[in-house]
Amino acid sequence: MKNYSVDTKILAVIKNQNDCLNLQKDIDTISSLAITWSIDLNLEKSKVMYVGKKNLCFKYTIFNKFGTQVLNETEVQNNMKWEAKTRHCCSRAKKILDMISKNFKYLDE
Image 1: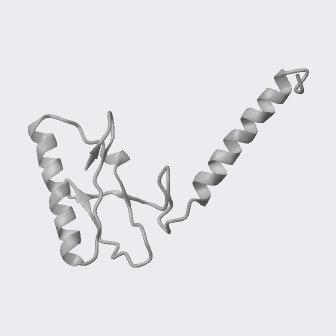
Image 2: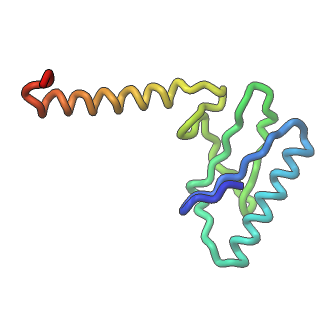
Image 3: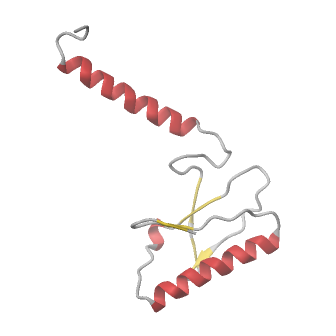
């Protein structure tokens, strides 16, 4: 489990159905602890990402509700490619270069 200031990520390597059930138990434990400690889990922001070609696509639940399935997260896509992140970084760099070229009269000096 990785915990950030406003985000909690639960990661697991899934090789079989038993691994899926263990991950669901972990999710249930976090959910019950959130109730005990009066911590709100935003179900609308809860997401499930299946990574790799041989995933089982188990339907995980939080409070008996299914999380949204996503194809990519901020760093990697579910097929383990970096294309979306690379495209995003290149686009951002181009915008910054465009801003610099528009705001400076002499770029060589």
